[in-house]
Image (cartoon, rainbow over all chains, first blue to last red; front, side, top):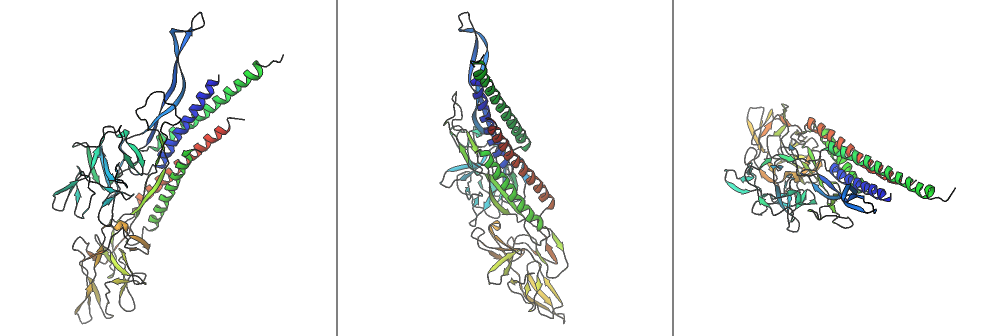
Length: 258
Length: 261
């Protein structure tokens, strides 16, 4: 009987976790290159239920079904689904149409990755993110921009005479969902994601004057939010009902009156 | 209490900020040489719960993959220096730059500011000044008996005198910046150089990447009303969605409170 209370309570915790992810997604509906969080759940302590034999023991062959005691958050991952490409006409807005990440140099020299291509020039002509991190080329050098530079779809930067100067450092991962979210639109490589690799031709295009918008779909988030709230309320009813049953058991059935 | 309350609040604040920016753009839709501003956002840091206190039945592929985000932050407001529409006015001292470059203006305290607003006037001593009375640099004095004033595409100012002679009055030069988005806006269509913009690079109009000067034209603002209206609608809706998230978190807390009666 008490088991039901715990199961329902764990269900309520799950709904709170869901709402945390939904709120973060909704807050970032306008963040360039944002990838939405998706919590994944799994059942916990799944048990087989068996019929009893004549001696009152569970018979290993007479399986009735299974009983799930609870559900827990297994992990939160982010969806790598591409956001909409929005035209901005800004000279230093870049978007990756397809796979891959821009590489940037973190504050302590660590290499980080981002899909947010809303770069700015500093007074020395270096290309930087809004956080002031330098954007790197494919050899790991900071990109020093000159006015006559143009970018082709493969990420090659050409000078005024059409000569190839360098290429944007755009890398892909075996499992991009295995990257770790750092915040500020940045991602960090992990064991799970694998090492950064160059992206083969045709699997991405660099668009200049475009930005990749957040991949949050507000309607889906709103529906998940309503679902989470209703489930939360129902679970609460379950707990209250179980509590009432316990109350009966203790005070009426177990009572010594009459 | 619940992280979602706070992350949704950051979302509301961000949208409110975006709306402030949009309002200012819309207010300046008819301001000569105004450059629209764009608000940019990115996500805040993430709180990683690791495995502490969370029962994991089987080994997971993502051992530290349990996290929640803390919301959104304003990452930049960037000014978009695309060319505004050029409108013909026929006024001899209305000058528009048809490309890169800023006019140099001397402020009252002697420092130099920069503008794209080319609606110039003549003051009592014949100097070319802005609508606010600040003097154009290099200083050009128009003789009081000038019949007409001519400004060429490369900035040469000349006046026709009553006797038909043409008098050369000087050259208007322009400046540009490595990073114009780093200029500081001080109102009245004026910008100041900053460490982020870099130092001004002076040059002749219609040369070295500078735009030509068009006499008798004004550059209008580059605000696109339709785009701003669409941005306003999305900002308002996003604000509402975030408000709903707060309401939902509140409903959950009320439900919790209803557990024990």
